[in-house]
Amino acid sequence: MCEPHFGKRCRERKLGLADVKHALARPSHIESYEGRDASQGGTNWRVTGPSIDGESIRVGVEAYEVRGAQWALIITLFK
Image (cartoon, rainbow, N blue to C red; front, side, top):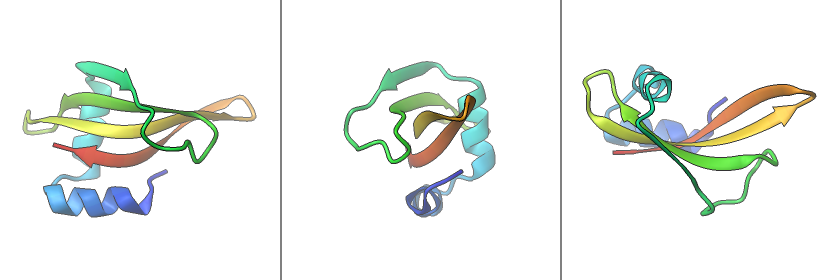
C-alpha cells in the first residue's frame, strides 16, 4: 500500500516502485522515525538502500499488523 504523497515524491525524484523495492530488499541502514503520526497504528521507519541504478535512496515506511498479518505502508521517498 502507498500513500498519495509517495507517488508525488517518485515523480519529483524520477524514481519508481521498482527502485523502492530494490532499496527495501537491500537495506544498508534502517532507523526509527518519530516525525509523523502512524496512520495504521504501527511504527515509522526510514530505510536506506540502493536504487536499481545504485543511487542511495531513503524510503519512509510504516510497519504494522492487521489480524496477525504483517504489512508496510510506503509513506515517502528521499534522495
